[in-house]
Image (cartoon, rainbow, N blue to C red; front, side, top):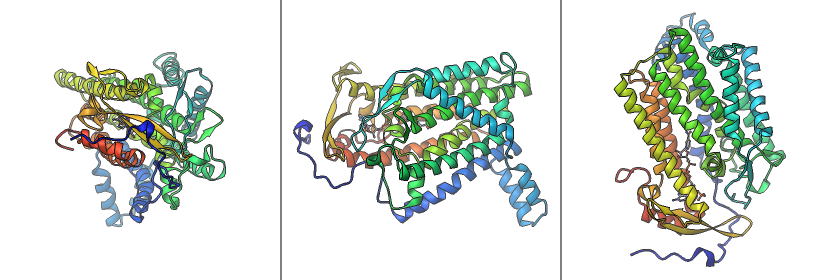
Amino acid sequence: MPVVLPDASTLPLRAQTGKTWGRSRDVSRRVVLSTLTLLLLCPLMVIYFWLACTHYQCSLVAPYTRLSTLFHAADPLFGPILRSQLPQPSVEAALLFAGWLVFQGLLYAFLPGPVGQGQQTPAGHILPYKVNGLRAWLLTHALFVAGSSLGLGWFSASIIYDHWGGLLIAANLYGYGLTAFAFSKAHLFPTHAEDRKFSGSYAYDLFMGIELNPRFGQLWDFKLFHNGRPGIIGWTLINLSFAAAQYQQLGRVTNSMVLLNFLHAVYVVDFFYHEDWYLRTIDIAHDHFGFYLAWGDSVWLPFMYTLQSHFLVRHPIDLPWLVATGLLAMGLVGYYIFRHANNQKDLTRKADGKLNIWGRPAQVIRAAYSTSDGKQHTSILLTSGFWGISRHFNYVGDLLMCFAFCAACGFDYLLPHFYFIYMTILLVHRIQRDGARCTAKYGPYWDEYCRRVPYKLIPYIY
Ligand code: NDP
């Protein structure tokens, strides 16, 4: 028996409790403790992975075994060895990093591009965003290829690989500085004060962010810039530099490196081609700007998402052509699901639910929600196509792609598979976060969606 929901357009205003949906405000002691752990653990993890790749052939066990043996034996070499194996700061790397940020900041500010619209915020704002990412990506890569040893030879194409340790230090300093700046800005000169969330815990606010959309001026958006530009533009540039390093060492580039560069580039170019869509995803529409995004975009994304290409410099792998073709096919199938699922949702909302999905009229729930200014709004939840298979089938496409990226590195080492493990944890956690947020936002409409589409990710499994 279908549940009859009230027509969203005639629903009376919900009682205002002073709280809106969105980032949690009431956090338990356990959550604060996990936040503190992550604040400390994440940077240590990135350094450990860097050290494992740089000094221990990408073995995750070897650094621990070697260093703990020295430590427990009270060996006087422990300190000097550890110090010599940690990433070292360098002026060149710091200048490279600063130049990179300034260059991307200028491209973001001055390259022309269309202006897209974000999702309505809990306080009722709909913000404009300049979406010139594809141009910035093309220009950055064209200049890199033209200026490097791949073109005019002004600098080596392996420049990023050559300064990887110094860049890690510079990126960390920036990531922590940006987190502190975002925290202070939220208190002192917020962009949209009504869209801030305070939890009562400094640690949680620092980690998850207070401001939803910190900005300089009308259009220079911290989240879109940091995730897209130094983060995602950097991703393919770093891969290219690692491929150049492999070429310098081997005199050729292996098919696994080509495959990886290609599949990552498909993901990245797609991101910029559909940058307008990205404005209505969780990163931009719902996550606040704190350590999670500020440090995450500056350090975690460039250093952990590129672990596979780093691995392939240390372990060049020639895949049998059948395997390479199979992985290419898996990556492209994943991409197809990822892109089409995301498009179905975006197009359904743009067409107000009046379109065909897989040859039939889209099935939707017209849901109501209110914003903190007391106004009532309506939105659409699609319940057919990929969104009728499970509530997050777009994540299945992403996970298939991630698996193909990692499998290109073979199965002898765990390190290159970290990305798949991490993405699985991230996306499963996201499903839980998103479920709680959508329940708070849509109430009975979300319950009805869960009733019609009972599985979260994979039908009959989860
Ligand atoms: P979604 O694009 O799935 O966005 C979820 C939001 O969409 C919900 O909060 C809700 O927001 C709205 N929504 C949920 N169900 C429906 C529905 N049935 N119909 C219409 N709208 C709905 O999630 P993400 O932003 O997490 O992911 C976007 C893509 O980015 C995914 O493909 C994911 O795999 C990828 N991704 C990649 C990451 C990476 O690091 N590589 C990290 C995270 C994501 P509301 O109603 O408020 O608009």
